[in-house]
Length: 290
Image 1 (cartoon, one colour):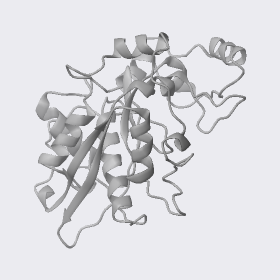
Image 2: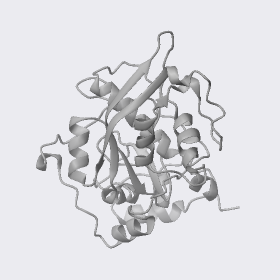
Image 3: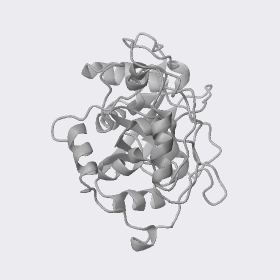
Image 4: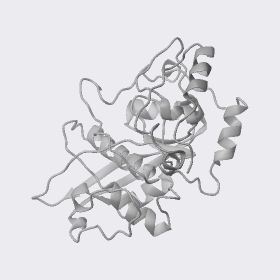
């Protein structure tokens, strides 16, 4: 079995040498074995997209595109969808468990947040099914917890077929053959009206400022697992995983339509981290995951 502990002493030394740009903390993910952590990383770039090896090389060679300040592109200095004009447009974070289903969590979370912002309904309870997205849609393309998936494919499925509400197929971690989907799922269906691929930091920031959340992919280094959320230091530099995300293209829906018959209810949602590349919803203008 792979080693359980990360190299905390070395990480502490590296952080101190770098001027303590961020803080580390032990958490449930650092307590997992290496194999268990890797299983949660679920982005598989298809042919024609940047490979993991290429992303790592670009980052290590310093050839990533520079990230412009918001003011340089007409965007605000900060975007936080938890407090946008006094309203919270995000949905609750969920745990993907031991499965590389991060793409499904990210794409579903972006759909939910986009719909709430587009319709200006921050209080709307809108809970879509990650299980339907991954165990049905990704499965139909031969993807599993071990292989992961790709965000653009997820949004295509959401556009062409749709994603049902969580109550019709609640998520549990572990490969499934879509058998958990009930026979009334089509009565509660959300679809992506359109989506767009963003390929530059400027376009990502502009989209966050004007439309809503985006999904993106990033390379995950070991130190990322120990990052303390909200930590600050003497530098504004994020951990390498976030820096590496600067090269990633992101895919995001331009609009989400929701069709629901009377008599049902809705719930909550999540953001997630993923693979040797990873997937997660962006909450404050940083571009993680999918």
